[in-house]
Image (cartoon, rainbow, N blue to C red; front, side, top):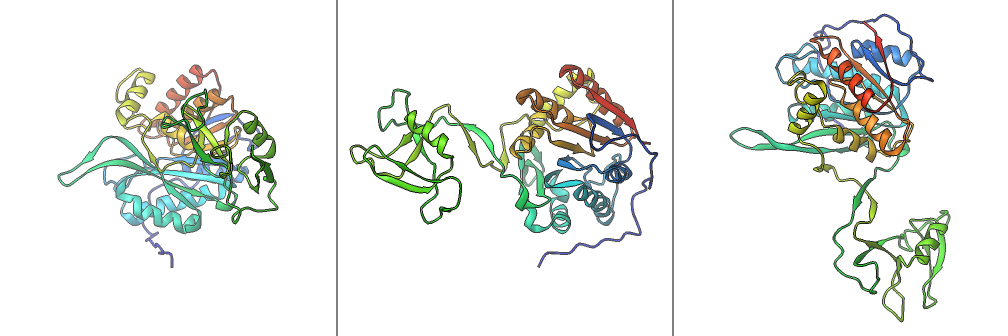
Length: 371
């Protein structure tokens, strides 16, 4: 039975219940930064009919230290703070959408329970852990990872996650292929697991005449191209009676199920150096997330190239830069919507970064004051 969380709602953070109306069309908008408290802004965006494909947020952690959203939360108040916003986030998500929530260990487990309650245990995807550098240490251990919980709105409608990797471990060349070493990868389901009604259920014939009928992982046209290009391994000659497998050469780009350990992105220090250089001043915003971390999370989710992405704890605006980077890489038309509270000068830092990034990527971002 799922654990039920409860909290005392008589003590909540001091937040505005309403904001001034602002001009925003849920059907036709470009990159947008909204300055205002995210809770009333989210309510207003829902009223305007906004639906999104992906949410990335890096909310304030319940550390007992000073931060913008009325720190020194008790656990009950922090849960209430997150609960209200995540309920709105879920309502804003399309059925095929997912949400990423960055969190440290201090609130990881209560946040997981809260998200199980809001999104459903069955919609939990994974905890994508970023190995961010030398780690945070005390006298007992060193913590090397930061956490990113991922949930679907409706897992049955969420696309399968994928990431690209390049093979470099082939050591043999069983058929002396002039293209060099290769290893074989599965390209079919077993006969028992095959679905005869699937559109990829068909027959192929080996060089010795053996017929294989089953469900394949590529359509018939692609299979014929692979056979023509000698990229199907049929087993040793002259029998050629092995289960057909795909030949994968070194340096081949392969789509694989993503690992939940993320290693090949910038460190915390690199991300800080990048932001300092971009803003032209050191330390205006501390501990930003790396651009390639967020772009990695967006990429593996396999959302359409015109996805709507929202970050309602925008911070320094890293999500906007990640979206711009991806659009440049694949000529996509993703739209990024940022929300940042106007307190302690952070909203102006967000705006300054967005202006710099939009100039670099030759794109436009609109600014809305919802205070």
